Amino acid sequence: MTPETVVITDVGPRDGLQNQPKILTLEQRLALVQAIADAGVPQIEVGSFVSPKAVPAMAGTDQVFASLEKAQFATPTIALIPNMKGYELARAAGAKTVTMVLYASDGMAQKNASMSMAQADEITLEILRLAKQDGIEVIATIAVAFACPFDGPTAASTVEKGVARFMKAGADQVVLADTIGAADPQQVRALTATLVEKHGAGRLGCHFHDTRAMGLANVYAAVESGIRRFDSSIAGLGGCPFAPGASGNVATDDIAMMLQQMGFATGIDLNKLMQASDLAQALTGTAPGGRSKPWLQGYLTKQAS
Image (tube, one colour):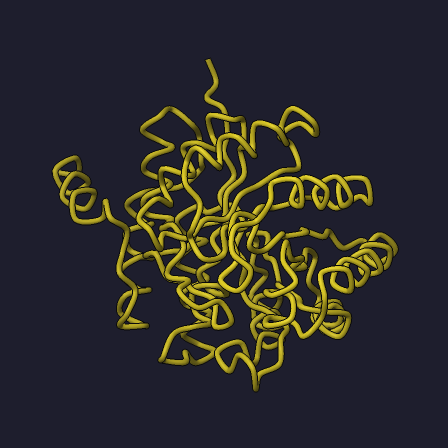
């Protein structure tokens, strides 16, 4: 029997680097992207088109795209955009897929984008219309889908309405983001099961942070509900500069190992993934590495001997 596939998008070169004290050079960012691709990760979020004053680590993302195009980089890439200007910059840079951030709370919308939830929704709908004409895929990511650092717990009904709206509008994917890592597996299972029942799993995804050490458990809960698309970050890098308390994303190291051990196909070479994780740690000096990394490295070494 052919194993079922789970698609992992590594967001380390964007979400992972945006909040690090050390700003990487263009060459270092490209090296990290290449190492992740060499490991077989099927999609990579390589940067964002945001104000360099707000997020200095993402300055030069247009150069990242230009360099990857020049190198005939084969792995599908994604750019995060905050608004229409970001979309225009991404389009000019040749991005084929963009992630637009939506909000499940007004507090987060104001802090992160200086707009209301409703305004962010309307901008995303307009971007969706343009993207259809431009042949660009749009991922609508709903931030603080479980809890907000400013407004508290997020009502499931708010998220359900947002998902329904953007599914109907034609978003290529809708991703639930646990931006501050506040979700628990029971919450995740309940919400994702409801959404899969209503919309199917094909266009749904999840994005978890490991702030409260429940990131991997939340991935498992979503898998049990039928979700087959997940964001993760090499070596557990991550954290939002506009979300107090948001620590690293669930590590690609951990999620790839767990899913493969459960019998899912990810297309990822764990040996090469460890090399990418080592590089992320060496470049940043802060990447924690996946929780499984010490064991996994020893196991892979024994298997190779």
